[in-house]
Image 1 (cartoon, helix red, strand yellow):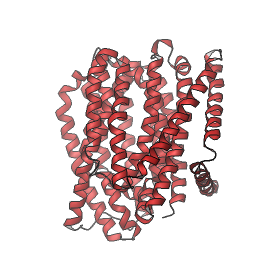
Image 2 (spheres, helix red, strand yellow):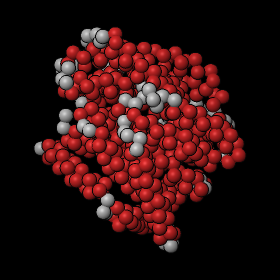
Image 3 (tube, one colour):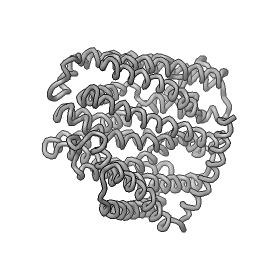
Image 4 (tube, helix red, strand yellow):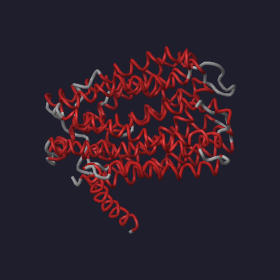
Length: 515
């Protein structure tokens, strides 16, 4: 596979999709606030988090199956790939049944997860079942066919399909909000577009790779290896779900839907940027997996250093933007009454930077298939997060929720993940060198963020012009400081070469688009 070309193509379409998914849902979120009310946003977030818990049934099957395809794709072993797809198909049908059954068992307990009042025109049971149906159908309708696109680094196809179906979804949702003010219709559209997305993706997969069909059987030994990977991924999946869902469910249960909606307004922007950067990770994961198989340890370690440098730079600029722009932007968007304290914004910034570095390390872990050695870390980290959530929310409210996530990641998750990477994939002696570079990036980001915020705080303007001026400063000052601090480093030079190489790939893709 041409890793750079595929990564370039995936990043282009992935960033287009994520940007689209940032802007249009922002408009929809604003429409819901003003046309329906903040409690509906809280309900939407709560159901999303509950369904993430139910998705534990997936067990990491998708990651294990895609990983299993790397080698047969490299060897052009069509028979094995087809047998893997058949196994994937069977597993996903079973998963859909498990999610459906577990969701129905959970149904009577839904009202207990909501503190305070629910909108009078809403039946939470009906809404929950509609959301559950969308999740179940996402597994039953040709979900296994997406694996062949992921393994071949053709995530850009999925992005194109989603741009089409998301456009249809948002147009219809905005129409029903504006005309009918009905949340039930809003959710029905989610269900219908999920069906459409799965069907179109399956058609695209068959058209691009017609020789890969779900047929044949794998040797028992290989199935056992896959099942072993899935078991190892299960605890990782549990940990990820708890971390992603616990905050939302705890806020809903202890603080209510209104507070949850305010929290989600901030977290929406954080996750939107995380989603953009995750596009880069998703675009290069298959390439990293291929590189780990065919390249030397030295080459892969240099790549890790280079990617860490790039992510630290991007995340550093984002942190300055969040710190300087969050509050004035929120005042313009939702009003003074729906603001969080500035101390919560600081916690969000720390959380964002740590998460991005953690995501990169997890990308290498997944690409290398280091799931057995890492099987307990996500679960222990998540349980530590949940325990602190339940305690700290009662003393510090929303501030305690975010702080508990930061503390569990810093003291448990990242040290453990680094240990696993540098005992399985890389020589343990290289860990010291990596940590020294990482600490340098943290110090430089801290200095650049404080400097940028200090400069921005000197400017006194009304909110809209203030946002424009501060955004300009946030785009200039951090990048200037980073350039001064890093311009002599090998990672900087390597990143420039990679950027030039990928830019050429992007130009080729854009020329094809123009044609």
